[in-house]
Length: 166
Image 1: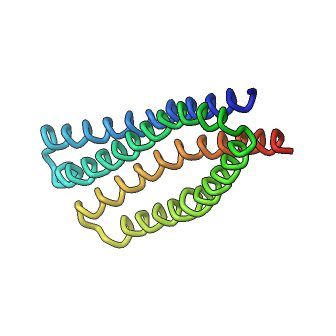
Image 2: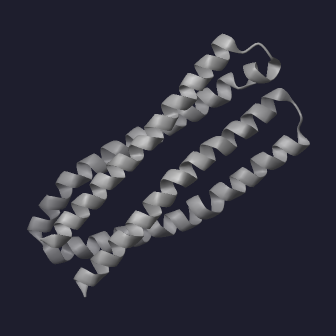
């Protein structure tokens, strides 16, 4: 029964964490509106579309993860009550898969995207590309911040699952 509480606490922490994607998505959309309403220079006007796109993507990520993890909380109890051992094993497999995805996407691909965007700032000196590159870097940093903490949580969660399984 303790592992059910651990799984539920982990899912609740994920729900809380994904709200930061939503918060930053709103901030990016508000920044886009601010650039649209107040932007007088070419560079300020160039930020309108990139920040709107980044905000929309962060909102999609945030709401998608929020509802996925919210529904997972109720599914945990059902799966645990049906077969506790199978629940633990399936959660270990899912945690391993998620940790591998973090390793590949969050800690390899996203830093490469940041480097590519930084190189665009250096080599392409137009307001539009500069705004796109800076917005990409900002969005990727938000993803790294939120997913960095999520990675630590799922790693600790998996360790608890393995202890219970043994």
